[in-house]
Length: 455
Image (cartoon, rainbow, N blue to C red; front, side, top):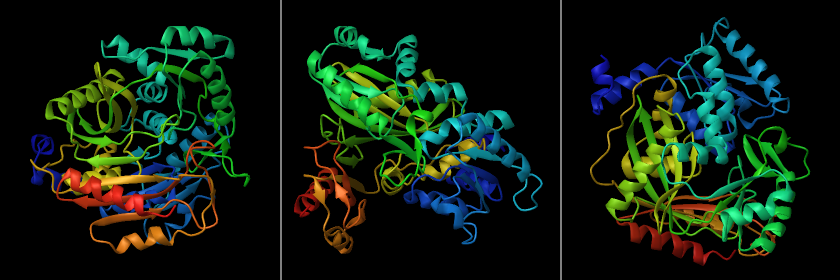
């Protein structure tokens, strides 16, 4: 019954899981290998998963392992329209394959594949994001315009399409400011600008960096000489935006929306980013901010999602609580990456993978949440302190045996070249995730482990 499905109870959650079992869900690209747990969780829920990805994807063998039902290779280096047409043909053919049957949902947990998943949902009349909403969220300039139209706080900004606009942009926005691609990801091509002279140099640096990016496994990465990946300019808009620099505390807000309203919203703290590149450092769940500030941040995050035209789904929203109140950084129309799933699961008992599957299938979502956190979690992305070659990652692996260490995950391998802040965007060496009885205990613990690493 719909009244039970739309309620917040363990009975309703159990009923939702029953409805998921046996459903055929198409995942548009699998992302990096660390996202394997998403497909494994889908398998546990009884989903018949079909993955569409480049022929050399790491997940191509998962069907033989029983994790997914089918892997469908598509040459992702084609034009966007060619990829869309090929994917449409493959989805159409599934109804007659005798294995999966007709598709019940199409989704993606990969930032750069969300627009394609939205187009496919629209084409096949399936639940999912409207392409116009996704496109606005992916384009930071259009996001700002939508927020301004909705009467929401919006930092000063200027779209720079050619270098001759730099002086005008600087005069309009003021300094300090932030230069960023309108549809980038993972802080690539993002840089703090202190003055007009700095703006001209940063613009040259950012344009040069963006020209060296490729899309590989659904992520923006630097070219490594292997020939893998598609030039980023062929996939996303690399025009840059100059935006007012926002002071204050940065947070993430993880949101579950269903039937036009938020059903779950959890605020987590972010440590100061490494400027001028804005590389992420540490995170803390739940937030230590005063409850009133958390409420304001949740309200802004939800209102921004609605202003962009979203009604249901999972969102990872980045905000700051500035000296003038809460401000949006960006809306990601997907579950957050890295430790986001694990943090929400450990702290609040909310499985964002299953909530995303509910939304993709058009099933009302409303997770059961405890009144107090089950545990406190802190994590840190350990940034390289200097450039050079990593001799060994044994010191990272050794942390796994320590009490309350959830993850000690190397992000580079022995022998890899790494970049320190003296030469550019610092390389993430590893991801550490720990638990504690309080926020401060968890944060102190993870930062002490980081400080002791000889890297």
